[in-house]
Length: 184
Figure 1 (cartoon, rainbow, N blue to C red):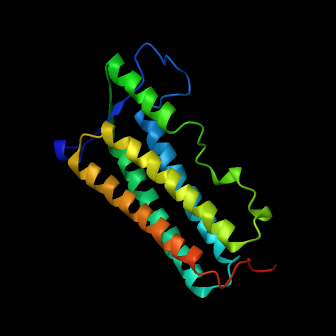
Figure 2 (figure 1 turned 135 degrees about the horizontal axis):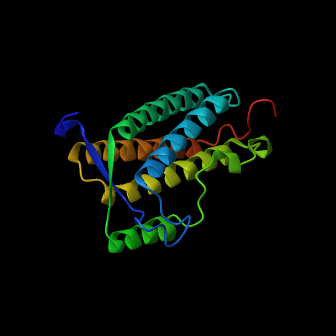
Figure 3 (figure 1 turned 45 degrees about the horizontal axis):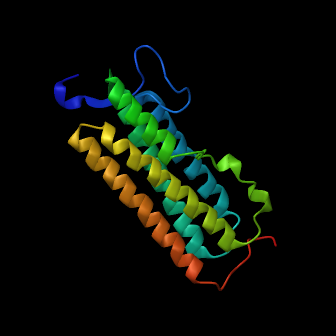
């Protein structure tokens, strides 16, 4: 592996252990979470395709699922290349504040929603928008810990694509011609 193939993400845990268990994550955990976010999104969007009756919404969900799969592959490749480094206690404290304070109690899991109880299309789209916003929030917190410009550009591209998902989902909230899901 040459120097151009390396991606450096700072490991924000201290060598002597976490000072605040659960509040900070190392580089591998951050990337595993990013991969899981994208995997969850892809799965939920593909499952939702069968539940909607609007063909244009079904097409949007398929497109979003494909983008989530592409994002997952990129994070998986990034995880293979990561080289982690311990950082000083000041940076570790900053990481705890970023990931603990900004992210708060967000679980980033589609499993927290009982989709069987969602019977209105606008509610389903609202849930998707919130998940997309949570994903953007998480990816934005990664930026201060990445040094490699190519990686930063790719993360910025993924964030822009997630914002595009939100925009396109919001367009369906404006069109109220269909308000229930298939099978209702």
